[in-house]
Length: 402
Image (cartoon, rainbow, N blue to C red):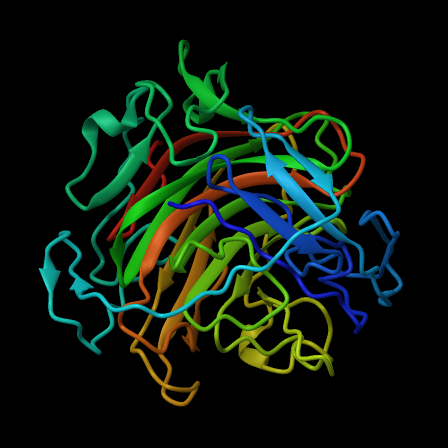
């Protein structure tokens, strides 16, 4: 993955989910990302937000939002994964290239308009009814018993290297989600002020992939601070990973994030060609959609994207099993006939699905990368997140254990 730069246009329309401003972090080691305040890659507050000229923001609950400033900042990733801000930048363009389709076993076939429709229900069974969870606690190194359909796995026990923004994650001794002495987890903590850290991995490209990981927000973590993460899957070119403020043409990204307003539920904040929830900016800016959409009727105009279940709020000090699925669907030149699909689960409770999404217009645009991160816009708690047992697969993964 090559280093890149990106410029985010300034916001001119007030709205909830882009009021916590500015692009948050870079994934390529040594890369630089350029961003103006008004970056939409921000958690939905479920209320209003005000942004200062330095890019920080605060949230309230009266349902209104103020515009953000137009200051442009650059964030450079250091060798320890931290990010610092300055005041210059440029933009990186994205273009479409061609490749062939990849089957679920990793082999290469001709590009096809047939899309996979693999889903798992809230019991951990896939669409065929097969049990994908099991009732046996996995070993400390879950990757040692990897299933053949797994594309990537890291249990943080064997020193795997990543592609950015740090090659070797910071590890902590922790019994993990299964209470296993001697277990190790990845720890994301961000120094005071604005900045972040991340793990990025290029993946073998597929039309559809699943991601499953375990996460704990550390005791003392401040869910009300303006922040992003823990992340998710990306499709298409990675030159613009983290880009914002415009409608993608050859990429899509969906990252799981908690809202800053209690009860701090999860949403999939998603950039894709068919996004619509906040694309009325007269300057042509377009900002990501939220699944499920909780920002009110002015944004949530499609009732199919409203909450479908009573999702739990996230709390600190507890391990959660999160699973995400993205299926690029049949490539179409417009939203008409689009069949992209997005879904995620919390401890095997299905929060979606959201079918019929226009995620791509070319079969060359496939799920291509994993991006896990924590970024803070402003002052925040030192306590961050712990991650363990990360798996990317062509089939549902589920949450093993009793």
